[in-house]
Length: 233
Image (cartoon, rainbow, N blue to C red):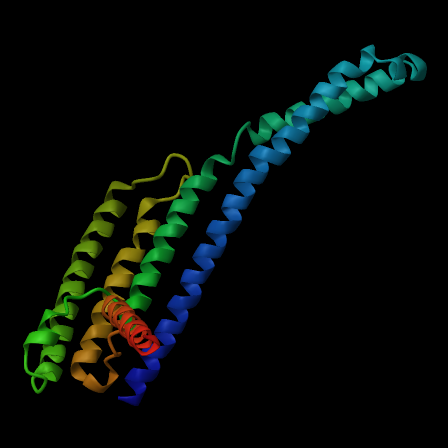
């Protein structure tokens, strides 16, 4: 069991870093896209406009024709650079950002499952006898594992068909199956993780149940407030 626990910890550590890198790249792409559109394009456009207007200025008449030729060369180079970069944001940045968001979100789902912070109904916790709840949680792990492994099987078929069709994104020119690989990985990771939880119940993370805890904290605050108000009277 120690080996399984260590393996799951390493797996969560790797997924945490992978998700963080995805969101970091997403942020950098968005910064580059906005900078290209709002800074680089505006700067090059101002350079081009100023170089076109330069021959008619008093400075050009004083310095002579050599400065006019220089301004025309600078303007032509700036125009060529702007044409090469394209006007507006970086075309492929938005598509890549969506890919990184997808990957980061799915890695986050795997981590949420590993920490027990996934959403699940809590009715059984209130209705069923406390003695059988541990066994219910074990069965729950096997059911969740079977569900995710089934999704993993379907996603492998999906990726295989995508490879056969040779689907390519026309903007990024990236084969779509490379992006879709995240689905079989995440579903397999979550399926095997819950299978390990079912086999080794001691590894099952404590359910966070954020909604229930928030309601209980709110209830405690109102109770404390009412008590203090009653004492004040």
